[in-house]
Image (tube, rainbow, N blue to C red; front, top):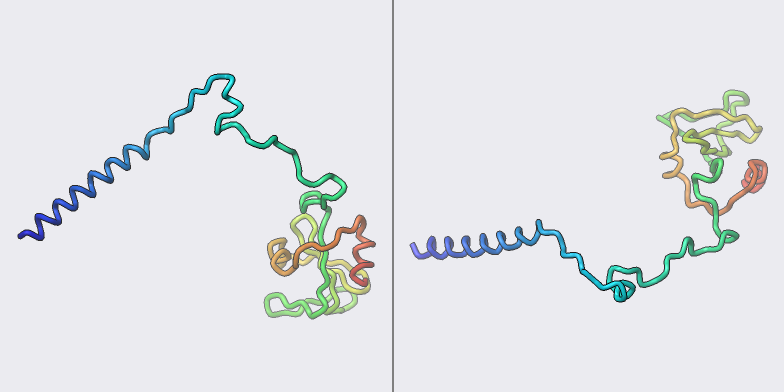
Length: 148
């Protein structure tokens, strides 16, 4: 019998604590009323002046939205859905350059034939490729760097 009385008291005490917490949870924080002279030193004022960007423009790399596309080498046979992809023009099945352009993935064989691969998308390309380590102004420069 004493256990039930003790349990009821503990429950009521915890209920009071929860009610007090809920009162504070739904209140809006008070807005400090600083005089105009102290407004610059208020805790809400930014302590450091706002700077647009950290790096100067000549040191910044373009973002993925600013570049026309990305490319990577794929030397092994490309297997998609259990089938090995091959070039429809020349029959090559390895030494690809994968091009990611506007949410599409294109396959380029060693002979220079380009084929759209509808089974691959940008998400697959991002998972399969590593971080961008170089930027090339033209497609030819990028292909030369990749050995094609």
